[in-house]
Length: 419
Image (tube, rainbow, N blue to C red; front, side, top):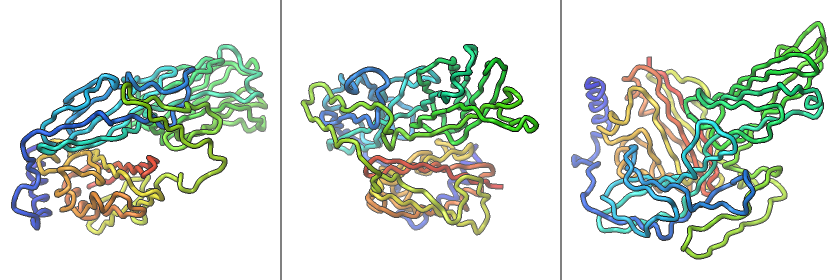
């Protein structure tokens, strides 16, 4: 570990040679205040999963963490938050959650949102609106009418999301299952077992690229086939097989037209009325509702990129509504939080709101602050970081999450191999 830290320190020192000799990461000691009086919670695209007229956020959990750590500074129920809290100077993250996320359960949507902020000595920081979106995975099982008429009562469908979350749907199950999303496990396995038209059958399908905030609708259907060429999806009889397809709806971006939705939100108790019912349903697609687009002419965004001496690592961002947040998560066994903090970096940062990391990020050639916020097009060039990354053998990932001014999101994970 000491060897790795030493190498990283030397390499980073060379990159920062042109910077001031003063330590750019020293934070002035002192205290400041965080005003919570005007903070409000907005729940975006919430589905009406129980019979109710609005989203009650009074029991949502509000937690303040030290930036880039799991250290809890304060935690309250939303309705019980103080109007002002005094904090030491430094960088923080405030997180709002509807509940504690469950590995797998019925009708248990988990909404969460967060915002980074900094406390300066003797100053008051305002937060504004925290937007919470569905942050686990919703899965529904459906059958076509033709297949439903032939289902036996013993039919069961087992759904496993990631490595741990698993639920079994009976043949007449109408509830939706909700599964915890684990970024390292983005697969969904669907196993069908039971009798159809009196014949025992089973089939297994694996779906990839599952993400938080999605509604995965798995639909089973009948499919005729040549009796001499049985289909591999599951044999039922000499002339009939079943098939499974999945429809993915992103609940953090668009409200599906065929879903019941909550039509208003609950304000913080005691804050007064500030209704914002918003416009009615949009009769047609609006081009400005397009989420950001992440692309690259030099990298394989879905595969592994081997680091070479002449690698060009550029990612192009297009956001029609302007960039609001540009979050980067570094996922690497070698570049741990402890190692990166030693040279003023972190495994998680927001280029739009870099806080105390701004000097270090600028020294690496990364755009920050006003160079990011509001931009419709931006190139994220980490080519200069590759020589440093090459020192550490193994696989390194950079998860990019772009949020635009309308809170539409896009995410891609860049994977690099250092040999």
